[in-house]
Structures are given as structure tokens and as C-alpha cells.
Length: 253
Image: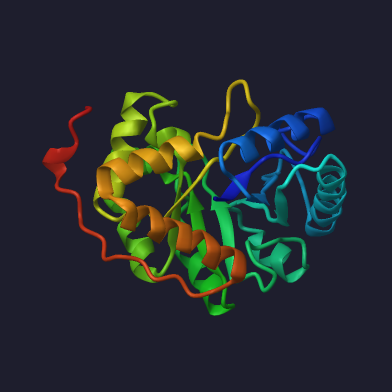
């Protein structure tokens, strides 16, 4: 499995705090079937992790994994908080996409908000050949209230990434229900762990894929796996047609 979102790099954010934490996470990842991890430290104001520092951190941790004979391949990435400075930071070569050509960029929204400038910013990124990937929309209050608000972004060509623990109920029944609705209507295009540690923010990626296989069959799992490969390789992503969620399906208010 490829994990497209993980805070495994030591000491950069609220994920692994030291190399020992990183090694614990790496061993757990391998035990659960993960072979490749996109390292995505926060770049959100509170934590400022620029491209060069992340690349160095990934190289250092990969060398340690190799020395410890842990069969896990790391890639450089970033979880970028949406901001008015995002384009400027990209042009200053401070941001990292999911692939070497920066065709895809993981973008995080504030928990309670979708900024009004989002659509314009996404248009600017798309014009530069960068496809935004909205991470964990199922944990954003705007999309929890109305998942259909993802549709205008999807129609633009934006992709969405669900956090595996959301789907298997780790964050509670409300977020799990929203996650299931989003998946059922093809409003989600890939799954990732967003793992931070083994105590409170574990991987759950294998569990999420097992549930996905049970509910939708092997073809859906294969589809998500191919999207993960495409994001790492910078290849074009084909996604199924979405369906609008009828309001009566919101049963948790």
C-alpha cells in the first residue's frame, strides 16, 4: 500500500517527535502492509516546513530506515494550509507536491471554514498545472454540514483525500457517517492515513481498505490504489462521476 499522507518525519510538527517515534511508526506501517509513505509535515503558519528542509529530513530518515533494515520507501511531500500567500510561496520554491513535477498539491482547510478566495486560488493553481487535493474534507465543518459543497470543486477538477480513521469510526459516528456518504456518492477520490503517532493518531489504512473492499468490492480498492500511484508518479487521475447527495440523507442533525 501507498500512504499519501503521514506525519512520520521527526520533530517537524505535531507528528513524530523524535527518531524513535518515527521508527515505531515505520515498523507499524510495514506490519500493516504499507510499502511507501508520502511524508507530509504541516506547513500551516504554526509549523513552517519549507521544501528544502523537508527533503533533507526525508533523506535523513530514509537512511536510518535503510540502516535498520525497515523496508519502507519515503517520498517528500507537504500538507499545505490554504492561505493568501500560497501562490507566492509556490513561486518561491517553498512548496512540495506529491510528485517531483508538483502536479498535485495536498491542501488543508481550516477546521471550521472554507475561505472565500478558495475557488480563485484553485483556478490559479490549475493554470500552473497544479491540481489541488483537498485533504480530510470529512473533518471540515462546512463539508460535514453539506458534503455537496465539494461538488463545485470536483467539477473544477480538484481531487479529495479522505482520512482512513474517519471511515472506520475513530473520530466518532458523525464523521464516519459523513465519510460513508461522501464515498457512496464518489465525492472522495483516495484514502490516506494522516497518521501522527501510534497512540492517538494511528494508521488504520489497512482497516479502511478492508472496509472499502467489503462495502464496494475489490474494484474500488484497486481504483484508490491506482490514484495513489498516480499522485506519486504525477500521472493523470481518472475519477468516477460524482452523485449529489439528497438532503434527506443527512440523518445526524
